[in-house]
Each structure stands twice: as structure tokens, then as C-alpha cells.
Image (cartoon, rainbow, N blue to C red; front, side):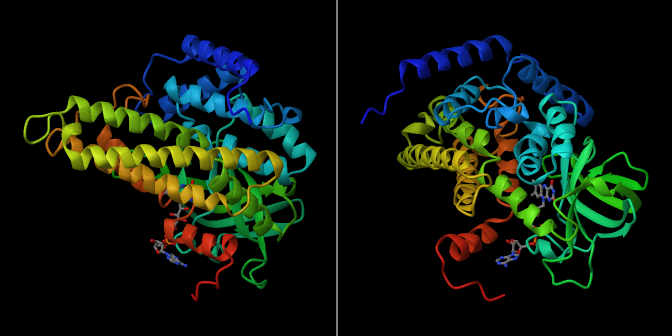
Length: 396
Ligand SMILES: Cc1cc2nc3c(=O)[nH]c(=O)nc-3n(C[C@H](O)[C@H](O)[C@H](O)COP(=O)(O)OP(=O)(O)OC[C@H]3O[C@@H](n4cnc5c(N)ncnc54)[C@H](O)[C@@H]3O)c2cc1C
């Protein structure tokens, strides 16, 4: 068996490498929400104009339709080049658009997919509510069907990028008398509709792209229903399949670069005895473990890409990668603080590997989000137990 990259693969890698070297912006990501949106959609536009938008999307929907190996190469080179993170385009590109491809009508696809790829519309996700997070089917946000439109009243919370989004994947309850998982509908909500109020929630990292969204008699045209009325749980399972299965592939590949940057940091930072921190056997041991673990994560990522190419919607196995990736990220950033020691943390740069002008402390604080967003680690463990391993269900 020949496991090496073929000559064509190597030519493809060179093409990706050269294009990124030429085009990755030098400017750092702006700190304010609107500035960051402008920067991220401009980068998406550049990707689109140069034929690199939607690398895993099928060509019939305007994507690149890259092969498995090409996608791996793209992500490796992208991470190495420190190219911009997906930012506010995350929902549209990584689970909103893919859900439309899997479940929407041809009219919905024709309108929305090109706009997402061109960086013309930013999407957010309106699933969670104050009493519906892990138990998502408990959602209460109401929508009444009134002829050619639905009238939405209620609240969502933890809506990332709600303050800069144009559209939202919105889950509402259309039949309050149906069983818990029935009576839910998946809607495309125009975030500029009258009756929507958006309030930012500051995070411990200091960001304000996290929002509460309030709906007061918001009119949503009936043609914005994806799937059928009261069939939203099925559509939402597709969305969560993408969110947990493939949405974080770029970040997963990037974690290798973070661990390499961490090794460099340990070489350059003196420990308590004045010698480089990497000479401390405990730190060296943890670094070696992290390296092995990112190699394992990389293999899991290859499997995710391969599976995604064979099935229209990722299955529950994605929860294993999501769980491992998010907890591994926390261990990596935790070690960075051990290497740096107290007092020096705030100003330590991330050696330019990560891009976006972030630092180790922000990385550490931000790493907690990954074990909650898209479903908590406990819920991932439940899914792995129930749906991957077939163990007896959790007694709630
Ligand atoms: C960075 C980030 C971004 C997010 N972005 C969005 C977004 O854009 N749109 C959106 O809709 N939501 C978003 N969320 C919300 C996210 O989906 C929820 O926070 C998550 O599903 C958990 O729900 P909760 O916060 O209500 O916690 P709860 O469900 O109240 O859970 C509290 C604790 O109880 C545990 N728990 C709950 N049920 C069980 C169980 N059955 N077994 C074991 N343990 C359990 C949980 O693991 C957790 O530790 C985001 C969250 C974060 C952190």
C-alpha cells in the first residue's frame, strides 16, 4: 500500500501553499464586531473569487467539491499559513449551508447558498433558550401559522454573531400540543425583520458577539420553512450532525499548529530554575502527550472528512471527535499557562501561528467555550454511549 501523497497531490499542495502565501491578509482581525464582520466577509469574498469557497460543498451548489486528500491538504496548508479563522461565517458555511443542501427546497438553496459562499450573508443559530440547551426539545419560542406567514414570539439565548448576522436558522414550536420532539419547525429568519431585538452578552474573553434575541410578533414568510411545518426536529438533527461532525475541521487541524507553538514557547520561556521550561520533565512529558493526541485527532479528522464524503449528513460518531478536540484544546491551553507561569500570561503572543492577534490567555479562556457550544461534553458522552456504543440509555 502506498500511503504517500501522489505527484498530483503534491502539485495541489504547492498551488494551495503559493496562493495562501500570496493572499493571506497581513492586517490583524479588528476588535469590534462590525470591523471583524467586514474583515471576515471580505476574506470569504476573496476565497470565492479565487475558487476556494466551500471546499467541501458539492460543485452543483457552487462549492469546490474537493476530494478527501485535497481537503486534508487544504486544511493543513491553511493552518500552517495562519489564514483567517472562519469567524462570523461559521454558521453559514459549516452547518447552515450544509443543512440547506441536505434539507431545503431548490428555491431556498438557489437563493441562500451563493450568498453564503460569496460572503454576502452571515448566518447565526437560534436554537438555545434559557430553558432549552442540552434539552433542546424543551424549546418554547412560539410560531403561529397565519396563512402565508408565521408569527414568532419568544426568546433565544447564546446566539453567536446574532449582532452581525443577516439570517438565522431558527427553531420554533408550531404545535404546543404535540409530543416534545414533534411540533417543532426549522425556519430561515431574516434578522432585520421588524419585532426582533438583539442584546449582546459580554463573555469572560471580553467579546460581545454572543447575544440574546427577542421576537415580538415577527412575521416570517411560510416559504422560509425548511422541511415541513412540525418536522423541524429532523432538520435540526441534520444541523447538529454538521455542527458536531464536520464544522470544526479547520480548528481541529489548527490545533497541531497550536501544540507546535506551545513547544516553541516552552523552549523560549525560562522555568522556575532558570532553564528553558521544556527541560522540566513534567512539562516535556505533557508536551509529548499533546503531540501524540493531536496526531490522534488528525486521524479522527481524516475519518470525519472521509465519512462526510460518503453520507449526506454526519452521524453521531462526530460527537467523539467534538469531545476529544474540545477537551484536548483545553489541555493545550492549560499547559501554556503552566509554561508561562503567573504574571507573564497576559502579554505572551502566540508566536504568530494562530493568526488574528490572539494570545495564550485568550486561547485558554476561549477553550472553555468549545466544551459547551454545540452540545456539552456530558451530552457528547451520552450520545456516544447511547447512539455509537449502544449502551443502555441515560436515566434522566
Ligand atoms: C461559545 C458558545 C457558542 C454558542 N453558540 C450558540 C449559538 O450560536 N446558538 C445557539 O442556539 N446556542 C449556542 N450556544 C449554546 C449551547 O448550545 C448551550 O450552551 C449548550 O447546549 C448547553 O446548554 P445550556 O447552556 O442551557 O446548559 P444546560 O443544558 O443547562 O446544562 C448545564 C450543565 O448540566 C449538564 N447536563 C445537562 N443535561 C445533562 C444530561 N442529560 N446528562 C448529563 N449532564 C447534563 C450539562 O452538561 C452542563 O454541564 C453556544 C454556547 C457556547 C458556549
